[in-house]
Image (cartoon, rainbow, N blue to C red; front, top):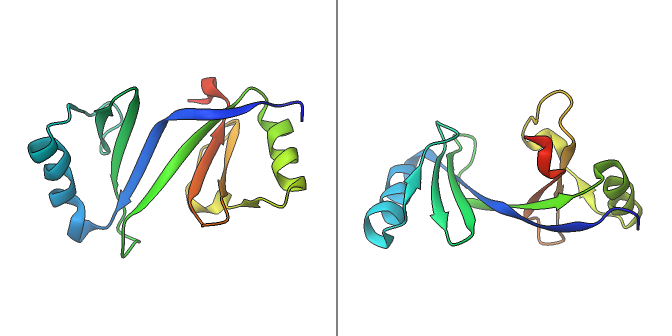
Length: 120
């Protein structure tokens, strides 16, 4: 494989509306994580060296955790993953025109964003 893939720093928790406020309060008030709103309306929390994003997801009935992976060459990584039979799911959330990344799922259906670090 010519592209390297490594862990990213973002973890997204997609939460349905009926659980959203309680989930925010849990991390902010009970756990005491420091919140930030750099990408409002999502609310993020410092989670050690990582960032935990809590996104309200009206189309979901239960919460999901999504993970981020970095690659130095997304087209090469995408080819490698496709050749390995990894399922792409780019329709799950729009990334914008020209974004150098895409969505995949692991065998347990956990969503991962694979992207070049400077893609934001």
